[in-house]
Image (cartoon, rainbow, N blue to C red):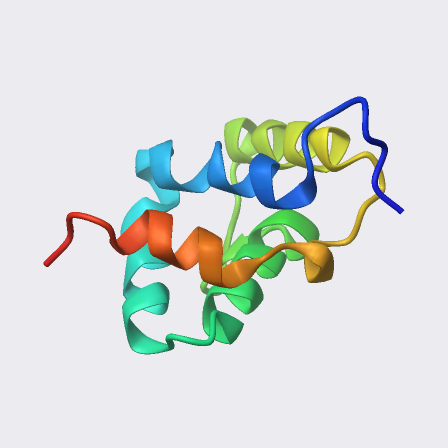
Length: 95
């Protein structure tokens, strides 16, 4: 269950991935390819929990970012994120 004193998992992701130039382009591509958000969820899960970006291992700086994201999630699962909201945020203004 989400701790109501902090941001929700959806807010954590929305406030991070659209603004992080290192991962935004790949995230936008996945968002455009799949309106359901499943590909985007898989991509972000691989970043946050798999420590790789489409097969490329993350460097030290990126690993610190993922640790911060996990900390912000407060043990909440990425599966509780509203991926359609994240997708909408990513693709707004892309067309």
